[in-house]
Image 1 (cartoon, one colour):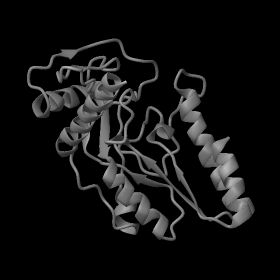
Image 2 (cartoon, one colour; image 1 turned 135 degrees about the vertical axis):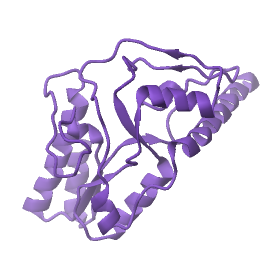
Image 3 (cartoon, helix red, strand yellow; image 1 turned 45 degrees about the vertical axis):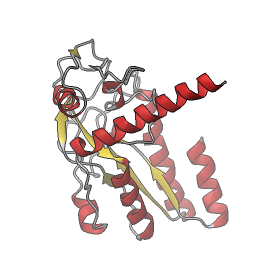
Image 4 (cartoon, helix red, strand yellow; image 1 turned 180 degrees about the horizontal axis):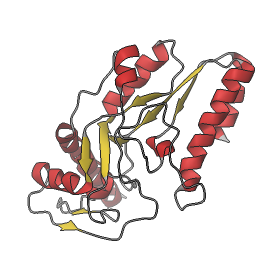
Length: 228
């Protein structure tokens, strides 16, 4: 509904419209890596379907407004984002591995590890922002994959967390969620060619920045409670 409302506004005032979609539109992909031309492999009635199909519907609405009402738009599908702007309790592949405690200790436990062999690609927020700016300053419609093609298994992610954040942390395996994609890796050839864009910050570079931000905000939150 938010997308529909904003598309109506863009039509009325002649604004350029940006839709930030998600790699979840590809579902549990049968194509690897995933190109923008891939239609996806999604369970329309599964436990993840509200999010998957909601984003797919937003893309459909945007294309219909473009074709039928002449709304100028562009949109992108981003991979998981390693970013300082996460809410501390945001449920994501990176942040689920980094529940930084009040004592500063980090545990690498995740409720979607399963056997740890499913893969994801992680992107730092500043790289995404650069890509979105390039997208809006250009004249291309999209969609564009704006993600980091570096691919990690979940067990590799947990090991990187241990290596870069806390070597004493333990890895805990728990049951996986239904319809969890087995693989995820964006093909960014189109963005590199048409937008002259590609990510610059690796997972190992972005993780310490993210964790430091988490810790600072937790400390500030605790200090605020003490001062009340």
